[in-house]
Each structure stands twice: as C-alpha cells, then as structure tokens.
Image (cartoon, rainbow, N blue to C red; front, side):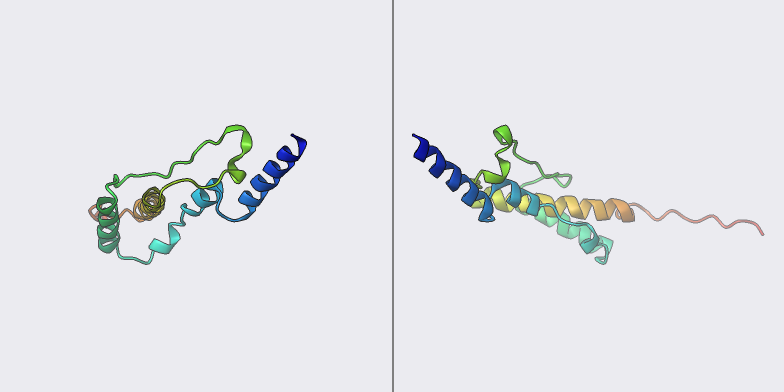
Length: 118
C-alpha cells in the first residue's frame, strides 16, 4: 500500500511537470491585448466576429477556469477534447481583442472635437 502511494505521487508530479497540466494549458489561453493595438479597428472587429462565429461563441466571451479539488490543479492532466481546447483558445483571443477594442473605442462613432473660441 505504501509503495502504491509513492508511485501515485510520483506520477502526479511527473504529470504536472510535463507541461500538459490543466492549469498550465488554461493559463496559456490568456493573451495580451497589446498585440492587437496595431490592427485597424474595422479589421479587428471583423476578425473577432469571424472567430466568434467559427467557434459558435459570443463576441463578449471571457475565459473560464476549472476548479480542481484540493489544490491539485498543477498536477491534473488536461483531459479536455481538442475541440474544447480550441474553443477555449479562441475565447482567450476574443477577450484580448475586446480589451483592445474597448481601450481604443473601436466601433464607436468619432466624437467631434469642439473648437474652443479663441
């Protein structure tokens, strides 16, 4: 019984170190919005809408994280299907695009600047 526990613990540690844990892969889905700041607004909106339509997601999609029991997140292997992993990655991209869109006020009509009398 004692050897079984040692082998099980070793397997869990090896799984977490292999780079394929659920927590590590979910963290990789989060992206920086700065990479989209150089993309023109109309192209960025079209890219976001196309990605959302391709994966049947909302244009306001936000990444979600699993909640593994008792702190075993770094040791839990990623058991998601390829389709689910791809959809989660797309969700991270959509969220990053939305942050860039919001920061730059894309999709909103340009507010006319009032000239001060002078």
